Length: 531
Image (tube, rainbow, N blue to C red; front, side, top):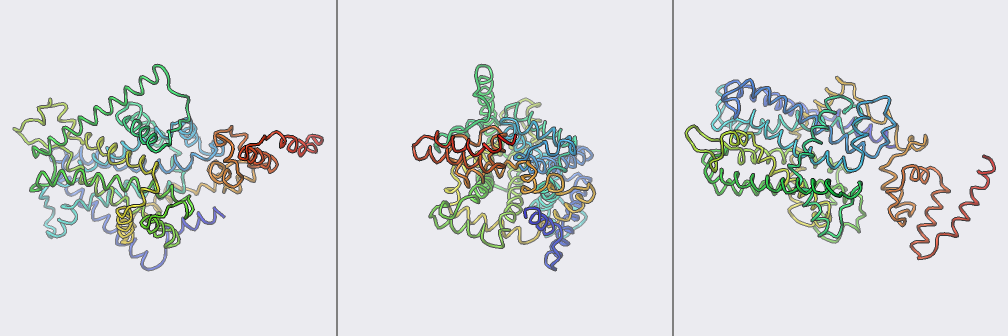
């Protein structure tokens, strides 16, 4: 059943044949091609931030950044999606995918990857903007003023290029062809780069924020690794302090540069407006980052568990009950457009630009000043304050996060953007790359959950979420942390499942589970005799 549903979604995403969808695919692809041509024209006429001095370097950095961004974005879908699946199922057919997932699924490594990946995405987007983002008053090929204002003045060309080529097209393939997508050494290299970023500790302050939010929410963060002790504990908190120091420095130099007018912000924009845009857009990005976490979390709750707030009910009704449930993926596409748009504006606000003869910001040495021109400080601020922190808050208080009119308004805006079909070119690119690289649905290699269950290969996502609820195993302390072999047996053997249910019920009733042992043992007498 799931294979059939996945196949239908696959066809719908890659080949809707109604006239409106075809029209959206065509006009979106035309807009993308025009944007790519214009961006290259700006680079070769030295009208982007980096190409003013080195157009070839700007061109190379642009495409390296876009390619790497696409691998990071697609990799996230594969790593998270394959986490519940037993990697032994594709060990022989996809050895590189096995290497990545085997290490990624150990302990808290997936969380480490996601943290490093988040900074990597934002930093690469900042570099892409530096390479291809047009300078103020860019003028190309005598194009009409209104065209140049739309595509260059607002950054629309860069937004379309980055969203469709660098993000959405690989997310399309990686979301349903997870095993094939990361079965290459580029994905392996990208994974380790994200792990190194996390290990360095520049975003470790997020862990402290996570722990604080967990305590305030009454939900202490549970690690899948032994408690840190000795040098490991000291090294962890040293990196947390290092991260907070970097964050503080980044905020100081960014605000100082804004006050001195030494950023790439458009000329004529008052300093006060720049500051408002900086903090306002980071809040919008934070809301959008938190909304995706809250939406996925609340999707598992019943209507009664979603609270009584009228705004929460409106949001859930629009999100889950309209368009046959397609508004959730629709939100993700519209959200990507909003987030990237905000990133490019924040990049202009935070990226520093020192004219000849001007002093450096706060009198910093030239090497540090030249490094800050790459946008490191903006990427760090955005990662911690406009992304991870909001995700952690939404994860701790998902229902409360939905209970505001701001959430509903942003949802409507995202769905409106998705409905325009502006990013439908991503589906076209996804279909091209799927054909070129021979991507197959994951079910081709590992089967559906039902097929895996019939073969004795277990689907952890079903075992961890559905099984405890349906059988009453949630009454057993830390059952989801039990050995994999026990959980497999509980799912595949009804008598073992019944026994564990009886133990859980006895514990709830405050009684002893011992009587159930005899019953369970007797139920196995015949099996033991046969053996």
